[in-house]
Image (tube, rainbow, N blue to C red; front, side, top):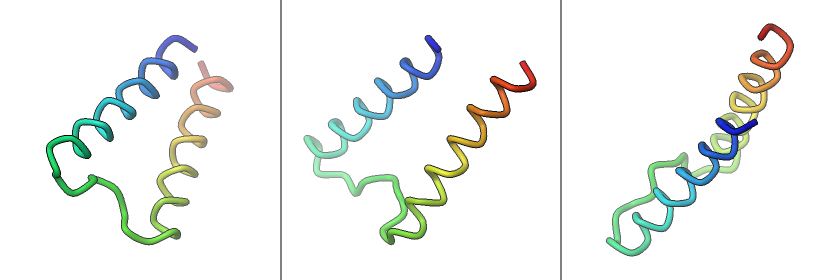
Length: 52
């Protein structure tokens, strides 16, 4: 659980840094791409919990 919170905090820091430095956000520009990233993340976390 600690790793998930650390990952979330890191994602927020990267997003805020990109916004402050006016760098394009390193994420898919379409909703389908963003949903794919979310699905892969949830799948990874579920797999880690079930197999770990």
